[in-house]
Picture 1 (cartoon, one colour):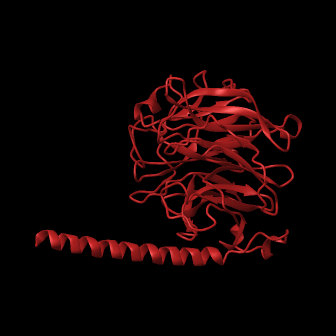
Picture 2 (cartoon, helix red, strand yellow; picture 1 turned 60 degrees about the vertical axis):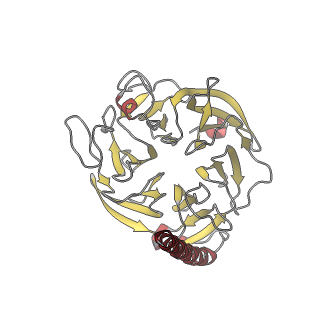
Amino acid sequence: MRIMKKLILLIIFLILLGSVAIVWLFNTSKRIADIPKVQPEKQREDIPLLSVLAQNLEIPWGMAFLPDGSMLVTERPGRVQLINKAGIISSSTVANITDVVPKGEGGLHGIALHPSFLSNRFVYLYFTYESGEKQTLNQVARFVYDGRAMTLDKVIVDGIPGSRFHDGGRIKFGPDNFLYITTGDAEQPDLAQDFSSLAGKILRVTDDGKPAPGNPFGNLVYSYGHRNPQGITWDDTNRLWETEHGPTATDELNIIEKGRNYGWPEIRGSQKKEGMVTPVAESGDDTWAPASAAYLDGSVFFTGLRGQALYEAKIDGSSVVLKEHLKGELGRIRNVIAGPGSLLYIATSNRDGRSIPLAGDDRIVRVNPKKL
């Protein structure tokens, strides 16, 4: 009798769970169906809040605009796709990085164009791979893009500790023309405090992978004590902002300064310890799972995977006022970049195994921030 009662309760729970999923799918699919496709260029005030640029992508992780307004997009399984201004995905893949190991959170991650791309055609990629000893590692490699395909030029940073989780992966050239690289702690928290390890750090390197002049420790490390940083951007005064995944909660928004210790695993969130930096803002008991960041018009915008929102940190000196946009409307949001016309472009991540994908996922969606 007791077993029968438990079975009945289990069946009722599964029915309720299924009903919630159906309602979520219906509401979300209805909202997405209402989003128009990107149309030919208009004045900013005439552009809708949301418009779909491209769809049917597989876990898009990084995006970079080319000078002609088209876009290169990395997909975590190892592909680089070209999307033109009308949202048409090229029939031929720009690159298929066969060394990529897309396990867990690993795979093909960040992408960055060299500041002198027009003359040298250099594109940089960050990805997870396995060594000959089956050790999981990450590397940054430089490729040459001829307008149709990418060919490997050289590996510039290798041996970044990797794991199934906490692989970092965002790369961007800063205002100083050096390449900044975010690395996770590779599920070994103590590495974040170890200067001899590249894990749990923000690295700053020259365009061929050497330590940037002025680095605080004479190596590639720019800052340390990071758990899993995945968003970096610079404001109009060249301050470096960073978003970082906390352990289930206490996700962080930081201002990064050269040589500073950001505390992991000694402190988390707003906890304090001498010599360690606390964040400008943190999620508290909530979870953002912030995966990218972009600066535009006085605000740092950052994405939320578990938070399923686009967050805005309106900058007021060294403090911020936080706002939440598009909550639950697009599912998991992984990437955000600023694009032509002072618009934002975001990429969903509903096919990463942690959500219920809809027909058309994953998408790149253009956002008019004036209408948020």
